[in-house]
Image (cartoon, rainbow, N blue to C red; front, side, top):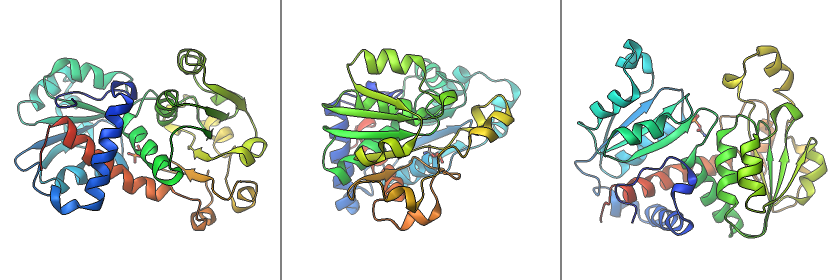
Length: 308
Ligand code: CP
């Protein structure tokens, strides 16, 4: 039963609960008209302390498409956070007006503080370099749709594995499926954090290999998950400039990949996938964007206990 729960990290949902959300999202995709009034009178608050295009718009579109309404801010300086109000006081205020809160924050753990401060569901829409569970729901549903399975996969994760919260959440979630082989492709400065290596991969016996060159593993992959180097998390601009173009997927490199490999990216992209690759039928990152809205509709539907 998901009603009333918060979603702060992927493991807050069991595999069965994720399947339930995918199944609702699938049903909404095939018959959206059935759901257009199910959230009538319900209100979502989107508290975005960091920039976003996909996550905020997809949540807001999802709520509107279910018949609900949205309030919120996309710029913390337009809220009383700029006067020094705490997260806890902000959400205690916002819960007086709304039924569910979606929060993005640069500080790791901020959505957890929010969830502990109020009684309505809080959804983590990305906290610092930590977790991004609704991107993971999107990613899993995309893999399921285009590879027909979540077990028995060789997945390459490429780019900024140190700061990429989508990567940390995806690796956590995939560790629960059978026969997953991860190829972790990054420069040595941007390898996965130790806690992910030890607490997730080693602890769960997930097969993984850390490599520097994409070409080395590309022919083996069923899924290639590209990520950008996260400029906003660097302390030093020179390091960012030195590392930002380490990996650029282009049509030449795609010749090494299997015919049925799928390319994913949480977006936004910078240079890491050349525009020419967009025409490759294996490119699914804009399909992923669309799936993100439906999966968030399924999530809102479940957490609010809506009915059709
Ligand atoms: N994937 C993702 O989180 O994109 P935004 O930063 O645009 O929300």
